[in-house]
Length: 434
Image: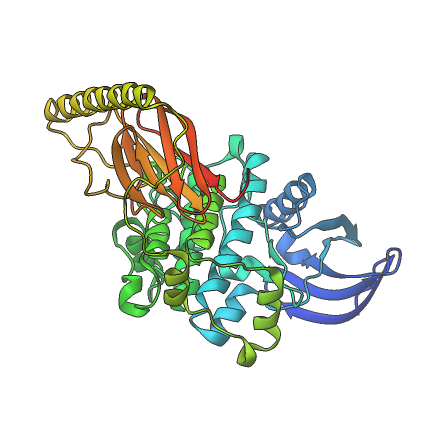
């Protein structure tokens, strides 16, 4: 058995053509670690050695609870080794292989934790470039950690010729185009899809066919494989898997915001303990009835102005009402002129068609994506837009707008938003807090 000073190696876990993985006790710190040894014959291949050292150098730069840590990089004899954090539990690949289609709430939790890991990497301007279920480690305590940064590159060093795992690569990687943080988001979408369906989004029998599918084909619709997945989850996955990087989410933080909104939309409270329960005792795990959750989260209300105790005199109230009516007429007139003067309609940068309440919008508009706890009736000026959760972002002309949200129990709040052309502003309101 291999001997390394400071480590008591007691098990060989995996032997491959390039590396051998051991389980060991770090005797100086009293913790279990993984020893990843680069075989001497593989180290003679320049790209193998560079990749191995790259994992060491980049991983050492970052510290985050959702990223697997590296403790040491050194040599034993003429062989390079890494001492890595040991995560006691399966990989996401093993969990999917065992259960096929994972519970939807579990998918959401894992995706959100993965989003945090990617957001942390991107804050360091590092691209992972090999995000896949095999590199996502789950602990029996419910932790989710992204690891294996052998393909990772700093953004300024990203090279379009770099390849990852074909079935999880972005179209721009396949086509040799510019690689950005959005490339990791596409891989994120492929993982999200696989958790829902139990099937890889683009895997095929041959390498060339797989690459062709990534670049040109859409995966089989989630609804065909698993009809019970809510449409909002499907839309999120589809946006991540957009062929055009500009049509994906703006960054990993925006993905986290979207996943948080899905939690609120379905009234889900998911913690690492639920994941731990599912990993350790899946037969006793209580699946969430999402349709029932929707019923609870979306009480049926009439869309009307709620009665309130009068605080103005009749005369003052009449003046205010007249001013509001005049402002509403001006707002609607301006909006109508702008819409009718253009023939080219716009699609929100979120990749979701604007609501039927509004006509197709020109590119000079921005969008407001609003989430409200517990829910609320939304209006801008005299225009009632419906109760949250709204099905689509609200298209608005650029400038400042006052948005009013009402709830029969929690009262009313008004916020001011600044809309920028072509951008999507995301705002959250908690009516239960003062």
